[in-house]
Image (tube, rainbow, N blue to C red; front, top):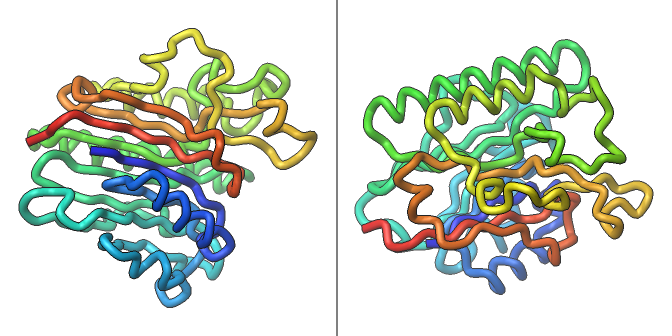
Length: 256
């Protein structure tokens, strides 16, 4: 099974690149962030893509802002799947798919600029943590993925941008990631490259940052233990440059 996550930074602006990327990579599930479109404005080339079912938490909070969704290959999961937008969700940032094998939670964590939105960011992390904790207590396996908008450790941000006190690098934000991992979730990308200091998923648009790889690793897969043991590959698709974020891809061995 192949699961991908991608902050597309506007699904209408990225529709041709997105359809092309899906055609090349054939994910079983693609989790999308920053859709920036309400349901009526999502291009049919994506929402009605042949071979896939689509689920959306569109930009109803504010037109052209935030928004998440999933594309799920028909027949990817045995039995029924259940789509959920959790009660704690705000600004259309969360999407959840319950399957017979695991629960997949996709998120677009607030950037946290400004005091009020920073407080919302920390609250969002805590509510997400509680949501995942309850699923684990129910015996569910977890795939938690998306744009976390936090570089968890110094190694996850290029030294040129590692500025103390900057949003995305603060101790409280990193502690929010720690709290999620303390549930037993595993950061499988970092586990497989524990010393790699050039493993980034997002780059600023300025100063040729992408070409120079002056980035941040803020798009992640956090997995419960049984799912983590099934990982055969996890990677960043740095060749896809249509968004300021690169897609991240996870492959799992047979989950039946």
